[in-house]
Length: 409
Image (cartoon, rainbow, N blue to C red; front, side):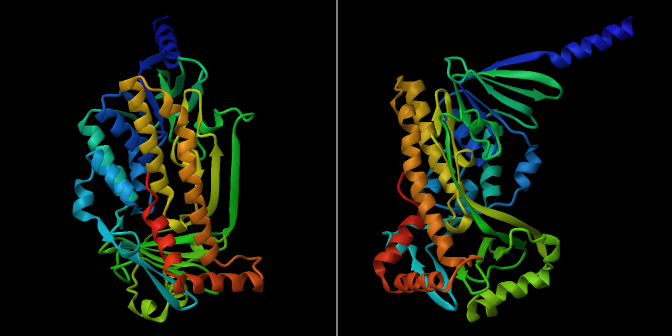
């Protein structure tokens, strides 16, 4: 009987619901969710972050690291920019090459002194974790079966499993920062939600190597064999990409094959300066453009990849998530501090206006520099004409530079 009682007690425990109350429940512990949590915490707004993966997994993800000036300023506002200021590489320009010809884009000159900073997304995430830890913020990892309920009422809830126990958060608002595959976007009724998507017929094979970058600035290259990009994470950590078929197996790409292919697509002087070495990480990423409208529904607000995805060509993914967080954090602060609902009501429209401009820019750069499988000679000549126009037009360069450093919030 005693044994049976203990078993029943454990079974009852596994079904128990633990209730947590907060002002904002944040679904997703990537940089968008963590940055939103940090900004709300600094303004005295209670919040809880739920993340499906362990912290070690989140910090192991390799992502881009070209930060717009707006994001740099937002990280300063969040007081998480100490390492960024010490280790980030300021970039005042970059090169675009097309079939060997090179066009330099002087960001600082073309935008009145604005620039970008190269600092890995993983490092941004690490800095946010450390700040949230120091503030004893609530970040819960390894949650399963996350579900959103009663979003169209004054008392929305989020349920999830943690260590075999069913738990529930009661919140005033829910922020969905859980990416494309998370439950937040799916919680918006299909009768209201409209998804826009464009899938590209190729991928990016990326390689990380402990080698010095090929130059002081990024190099984007369009070539008859496909796109290539020379990027960096630091002065001794480089990130390179080549366009490849989406169904390629990364195991078929040896380091030697990758380096040979990359060199063949770069201008001669750039290829000659390339320092090769063993890869630390290799992966193939698909490319797509995606937008969900609206980005809010009743008490639910989407931010980051939960609402939109861009091809990485324009370096807009993390930066676009940051602009969402900028608008959303201020809307929450207005609501809780000033009892002003207008910014929350306007959030979706405000965010989407910037989202679509970033989508356009990323799509334009992708069309300019990639080889499309069904491309005919007319379209190839259009690409060449577009690049020729860019080389010869100060206005075209200024437009590119303005979008690359990031439109104003």
